[in-house]
Image (cartoon, rainbow, N blue to C red; front, top):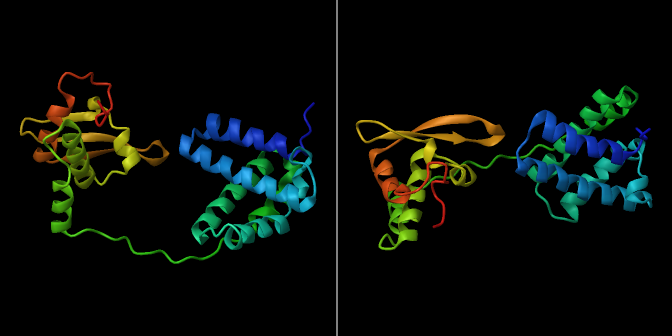
Length: 223
């Protein structure tokens, strides 16, 4: 019978069962959560002079969590946003553990009382129209990769998609209409799907990229 006081038991269930099978989070989110535990468990073990595999849930006290957060800012020089992101992971882990193991509810409540730090949100910058035009002129469109790079930049400008979202667009996600304009299906963060209209100019740039290729291929694939 597994030891449900062992940290390893709950971390494995949280990362493997909860995040992947129950929540179905993206690979990037899985990696972020995993990285938090790599840092936190090594820090806690060093502070407590214990082996990582010997840690129990009650070892991960609010005091240890607060010291870890201070370590991130002062020693690792992480931003407040990164500090809060790591804490959000630990809050989520505590909630999962408390809900799955009622004997840990009190510990869960103590961890979730560790507060986030307030931070200023920087205003989102933007580029002027002449700066965008200069950027779009940068790729050498006389070569195949330059055509692709120009089409990609135009697509990002048109759709407002993230770079990772653009990388995931397949040819079959494009839809043309009679006027030569079209739309694209974009799978975003949290697997949320949205549809974005595309200009005629953008759609025209895609034709050389997709000629002779299978519809299931990535649109901006290096050839």
